[in-house]
Image 1: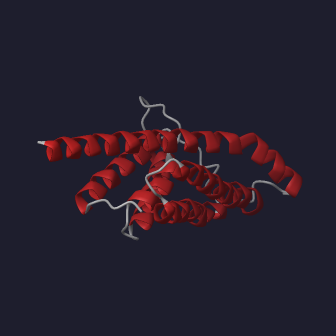
Image 2: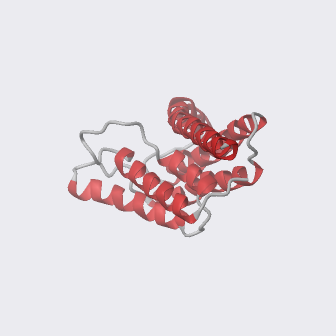
Length: 191
């Protein structure tokens, strides 16, 4: 299991909030990174222990969305009653992260568990967010399972790809930091 000091968790939390702000929609015209929203919620579940982090991140995401619509001219197409299905969608990612944090061990077999947990969490998140939008937004007069399957084939790979990109970068960063810390500790012991 991951055990991080409160100071390290604070720094990670601030970094995740900044990443969410920089990549959510078109909030920063000069930064054109793929959305990290899903990864932020998953990583918050893995790395940050306070439970209030989830609602705080959801409030941040919502405020960014509402500000983009109100002041940046972003389309309000996604604003519908289905928007609130993002709570359980992001919750599934956060919960997947929490579960993985409890299962994580510093060995290679954890990588397969990480992939499985991310994949399952992402599928649930997409079914809630994409499926919820299809069925509850009012934008589609005749939603169907066939249309949901089409939308999954069209949009889910991009969401999963973005998630995999950021989780992969976080995993590489984690391994690098753990290796550097381990090397420093071995050097201090050998002195």
